[in-house]
Length: 388
Image (cartoon, rainbow, N blue to C red; front, side, top):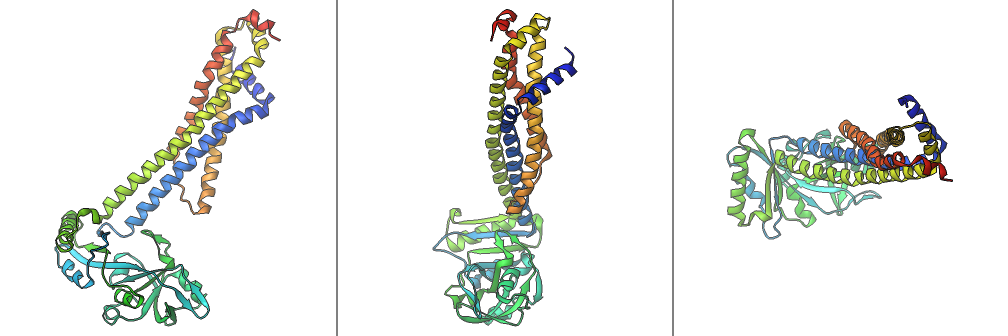
């Protein structure tokens, strides 16, 4: 039988049982769309994390101390700056407090106590006003810099620079407004309030430091600088490596990429199960089709159709079902991934995954169509003609 005739017969059979064919393809559509969407979201998360970490620059070292009993004192940071290859240091600490202005209150803001180097090291830019100065830190000045979202909440469209807000009931003068920036290194910059690190004492906080960014002079010596910082922390705080971490941006990127890539593989693997389930659906429907068309098979065999002709026809039907389901699944996956971006998910369309998912759909349809096709081709024409 010619291939054209077989294709025509396969399409006719599919169109004759539209509902059954649609339900058969549904499993493959869901499987392919799931693979594309979940892997795309995983790739998007990897890209976001990489961009956030890289936004600090490759000449930045991050120091985090998790010990509850030990921390760096603010006045010891000068000793750290004297270490070889260290250009500047930006300590920071999160402070819990409530912001108010007139009758407007916002308790969702992230208040961070920082020094005069913080904006420079973190590449955070000002839209209006000035930075926190060394004089503000020495005088424990009650001044602050607002993120764009906080400023909009408290001042609407008015320029906040020079105005006052209350932090836990104390008046603070707004000296700066940050540019709209979004999220960076896990911090929502638009919803942040920066105050001098020494002013944290007014809010019931000490000036001990557990987190800081260190900018190096020579990126080529960054590993040696990490060793110097680790030695300093071990000797001065007398804590084990379980209670602190000193890492460069490259090592953070590598770690994050490993985590997100593993997550992407896991999500892709879970989604691939749907493809297998879809393949089983194809096999079940093709078996039903063989049973329904037993008499037709008997007639065709009695008229001279060979075993391989019957087998090939049912294989083509399974393959056509899988290909149509694959095409629809790819379209649904791309549309679904695009819609996911409207819900704050990052989605990167991975063309390789799209191709692999589509080919997998066709292969699965072919594999699961072999048994029904083999069963159809093996039917005895006399027995088939007796079937009612």
